[in-house]
Image (cartoon, rainbow over the protein chains, first blue to last red):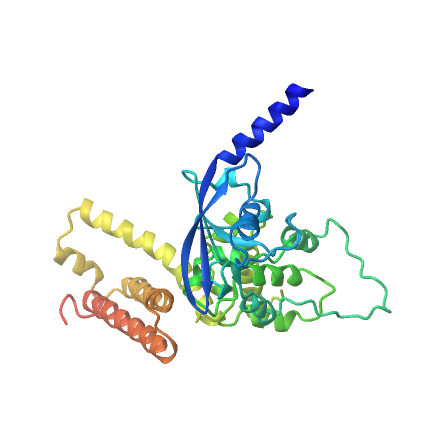
Length: 254
Length: 114
């Protein structure tokens, strides 16, 4: 028992002796730069743990965003060693390169301060893409019967587990090149609604996703599918929108 | 930047180009393998409605397809916007159509000369 306690103590000391070099983007009022911090390298820690350590132990002025810490809320996404990640579920050991970690705010979004980005453009594009449910009946009407094996339901289910983290939006090179492009998340959500037989806003939605910022901008590079933490495939959803809008042009319905 | 019409025009022109490209490659291989001279080729193409339609359609599809493709590249990589983007797209379309149309005219109508 005593041996085990001593062993645990020794382990802790060894842990705290090892450190890693963490570069974190610091920005306020439009001017930014990377700053270096020495952070304990622990066997088990997430990137969010590292950011929290810096804020709590080294520099309390560091700004970042998180909420649930269990991969549900989509608040804590950041660029980690150049790739967009949900930091609360990203273990340092999986992404660290040569003992170094570089943490920056999400790409393709304006920075409010340090690691916190302004998500407004991201969500404004959801609205522009009509990626919002439009009920066709009221709560007083009977529930719509949708069987679990309905093809449209299956298509929607494949794309529904989005947590709005904007990792796909940051991974998308088309968003980087074309600020008008709605991006993978908004179009993915629109695709789930195209497959929702209860929805009453299909004409407006198909017109929106066929507009200048819409699905035709996608080059199917699949950065979104590569980095989506929930392993969704927005590229596939966008391909579905291309088909649906093309069919509507040919007058065969959706 | 790309609307439904432009998107469909690019996809449909690609659809047209697929068999025509294969046909064109086969024609090139045949002409080279068989050692056809220029005059032998022109003897086959001059006055041929079939070759005029084959390469005329090809040129039209290429002009549409390339103009829309370069429109996207111009927008994303060169930052060309608005009216300038439309002008660029039309210039590429007209330029390719003129160059290709001139070549088709030369080998199928004018017998090799213009």
